[in-house]
Length: 183
Image (tube, rainbow, N blue to C red):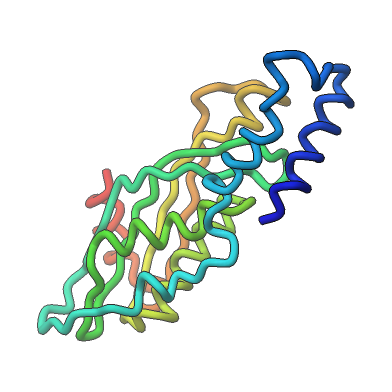
């Protein structure tokens, strides 16, 4: 990331809204924002393969579910936060990954300018590509600040997205089992 460009951009925004960038409370704001962006956009340039490449062999190929993975992301349309929970499932095909790696995979994609619909698909596609499971299913429930603090102003509304891959695509019984497990 180019911290100098971020700092200059923040100064331009502050000037654009009529603020004085030299007043005490704003003097260090461009630097603080640049450091914050390093953290909240830390998924830029990262690959989920890093987290999904170390696997363990298993004989049991039953569904693995990691639910209630809290995430924070940034809407690419308004650069406002959206946050919520991701629920991730897959049916192994002889190998599993450490459970923390599923949460790390969510983080890789959440820490980018993002759309929830895209985030949901990226997580499932990464599982399919790197774990090669029989199938994957991902559901995300999130509140979008672009809907709660501006525009329609509906706090508490949540957007729910889900995607299915592999054997989850046509097996509604399997999908329903997933939904029961995450509720």
